[in-house]
Image (cartoon, rainbow, N blue to C red):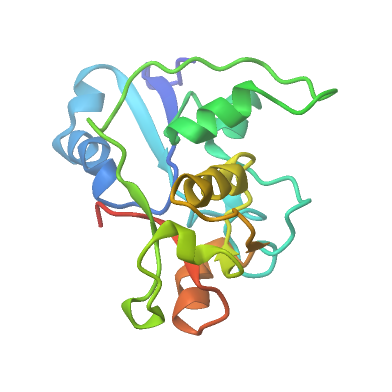
Amino acid sequence: MTNKEGFNNVVVALDWSPNTNHTGFYVAKFKGWYTDAGLKVKLLGAHETDYRGSYTEANGTNPDAGYPTPCGKVAAKNATFAMNSPEGVVGWNTPPPGVERPALKTVAAVLQAQTSAIVTLKSSGLERPAALDGKIYASYAARFEGRIVQQMIRNDGGKGDFQEQVPPMLGIWNTILSGAADATWVFTGW
């Protein structure tokens, strides 16, 4: 959509608070490359109020809440593009039975390889996925997340039995540091 200054408005819903995975977007904005191309670009990060309910301390503990995700922002026409993980896109495009959503299309990969990992504190002594049996996993409440972790544990010789808890998303690392959970999924690039 063209605005009154003659620029095309573009909103990019980022997948988290601004970080190194988003560097190219911010460099292009700072250098004026979007403006040169006739674009007025807004970068929407998880720290913004538009993501309230998904990434805030007050609302992040409710897995039944309508989490505003990057894919959801595009589907609701509140963003032009979304940055999301491969599992996030698969989860969006394979909704539960009875849930209808517009299909979204992946148009680019920003990174050449997956940059996330399941982590524990070194002091926990948990050194293999199978050791997560009977432990507490701090989840982001992504649709396939628990199943991915479960299969990872099984593939390493475990049963895949663990407790999944959904703490506030922006405080998930503190959940591990405090000992309230044993493992979580993090981005390794930063």
